[in-house]
Length: 468
View 1 (tube, helix red, strand yellow):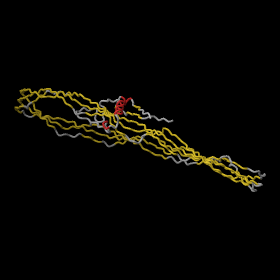
View 2 (cartoon, one colour):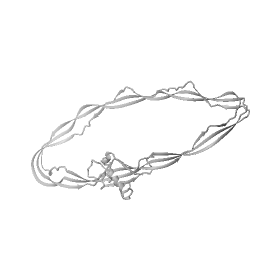
View 3 (cartoon, one colour):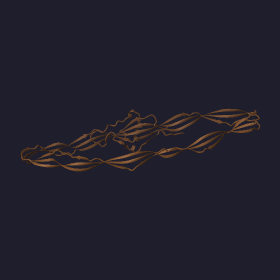
View 4 (tube, helix red, strand yellow):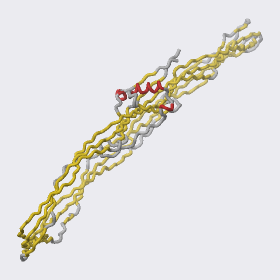
C-alpha cells in the first residue's frame, strides 16, 4: 500500500490569522499589570517521542510555523473512527447442486369420463378515497386602540433653607508681604518597558485513513428448478370431458387520500396603547436678601503663611513593548475507516425431475387446469371527514406609555442676611513660593501574556480507496 499525505490549509491558516486573540488578557489595557497567565499546552511533548522527527518537521513545515520556536504537543485522539466509508464489496457465490426425482404412476383404463376442474381466481379491486384534514393557523391583527389615563397633580415644593447670615467685613488694611522661595521634586516623565510573550496556538488535525477488511457470510439462498416432465405414455380411448369451475374471489383495496385544507386555529392580536399622564407642579423658591451694618471694629491681624506652588505638568509615559513570539502546534488524530467487504453467498440449487409412468386401468380421472385470473374494479367508496370548527384565540398586545406634564410657580422667603462689619486691620502676609524640580524614572512592568489561536490545519494521511 502506498502512503500518501495531503494537506488542506485555508488562506487564513497559512498566514496564521487568529480566530480569537487575547484570550488570556485585555488587548487595550497597559496599566502596568500582568495580563492573564502564561498559556500551558496540554498533551505530550516532542520529548516523549509520540511523533517521529519526520512527522514533527512535516507538521511544522505545512502549518507555516517557525522551526526555531515551535513547540509540537500531541493530544492523541479516540481510536474509534469518526467516519466509515464503504470502499469495495466483493461477492463470492458457493453453489451446491442437488437433483430430486419425483416419480408419479398414472393408471389409465378405457376412460369413459374426465372431470376437468378449472380454477378461477377473481380479483375485486375496491377503490377507496379517504379525506384527510390539513389544518392551518391564521394570524389576524386588528387596529390599535389608544387609551389615556390622567393621574392627580403631584406638587413638588422646594424646601425653605435656614437663613444664611454672611458677615461682610469692610476692612481697611495695610498689607506687608514676606516672600521666600523653595524647591520640590516632581516626576515629569516615565519610560515603561512592557515585556509581552505572545503565544500562537495552531490546532492541527491529522485525518488518518485506515484500510479495514471484513468478511460477511450471507444466509443460504435456496433455488428450485423444475425440469421438463418425462412421460411414459400408452394409447387411451376417447373420453367424455366435464368442465367444473372453482372460483376464488380476492378483494383488494386501493386507498387514495384527499387532503381537505381548513383553518384549525385563528390568532387575533389586539394592539392597545395605554398612555398615563402625570401632571407635576413645581413650586420654586425665590430667595431674598436683607442687609445690616454694625459699628466699626479696630484690630490687627497676622495672616497664615500663603504657599504659591508652581503647577506640575502631567507625567509623560512612554510604553516600549518587548514582544517574544512563541508557537504551539496542538496535534490531534482522528481516524477514517475505508472498509473492503468480502461477501460469501451460499446458494443451494435443487433440480426437480418429474417422471410420469402411465399404467392402463379403467377409471375416471380428474384434471386441474392452470388457474385463470380475472380482475374486476368495483365502484369507488369515499370516506368523508367532518371539518372541525376554527379555534379563535384573542391575544391582547398592550403597550404602556408614561408622560409627565410640568408647570412652575414661585414663592418668596428670606434665605440670606448680609451683616456689614467695618474693620480697620493691619495685615502681615507671609508668602512661600515653591518651584518644581523635574525628575525621570524607568519602570519595567510584569510580563504580559497573550494567546492567539490560529485557524485549524487539517492533514489527510492515508491512501485513497481503490477496487479491482
